Length: 63
Image 1 (cartoon, rainbow, N blue to C red):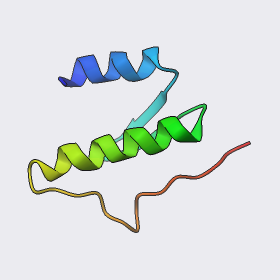
Image 2 (image 1 turned 90 degrees about the horizontal axis):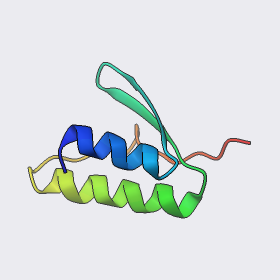
Image 3 (image 1 turned 90 degrees about the vertical axis):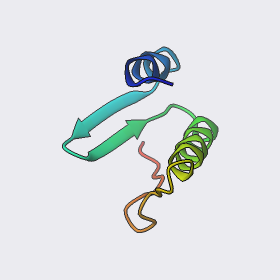
């Protein structure tokens, strides 16, 4: 998915996105959506022999 299409897709599915340089924070209303998106990102990066840093990538609950 192209970057612009990805951002529109995320917004349409209730995801808030905050970016700074090469860091990002994504906010989802439902944990299942966050889990699914995280796996999609990992799968996509693996296609290019890349990976998210395990100590810098996490799901947190905010309420």
